[in-house]
Image 1 (cartoon, rainbow, N blue to C red):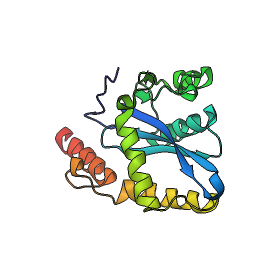
Image 2 (image 1 turned 135 degrees about the horizontal axis):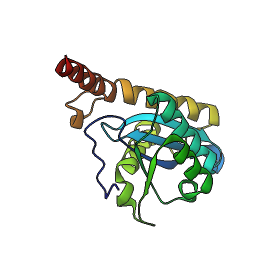
Image 3 (image 1 turned 90 degrees about the vertical axis):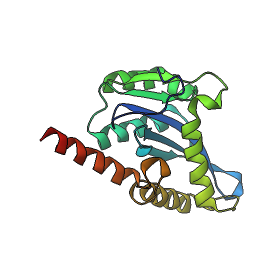
Image 4 (image 1 turned 120 degrees about the vertical axis):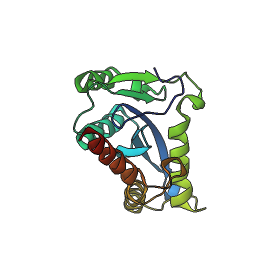
Length: 179
């Protein structure tokens, strides 16, 4: 299993996921579940809802399967939340051919990469504000940030390329080497 190793030599082999809360005006919340490819932290699945039931994380994993075309043979690491440990989520992972891995209870370091990703999202979208305002504004803001994150946000770990560009160059290199 992961053993806090969130690296991967190729896309589509190792994924990680978590849930974060998105504060709204009036003390309400939306919840965001994300699935990141460990290869270069690309967001391949996500879901926003007004609940933290299993359906939230299942929708994010289904989106990852659609985005990647398949998840068969991949590993998926998550926090030790009830949603990820549920029978329904285990069944979905089995159906998609995904091996599950969970961090220890109460140990945020076991899912530090996802925690860091969510912290960046909130820091860059809230920009010091206490909440996103209403639900629609929150959804639009988070969607725009996730899109920008994959397509334009540069990372030092990716040689200052976006996750999409880094992955594209990886595939191009593989095709060149195979030819």
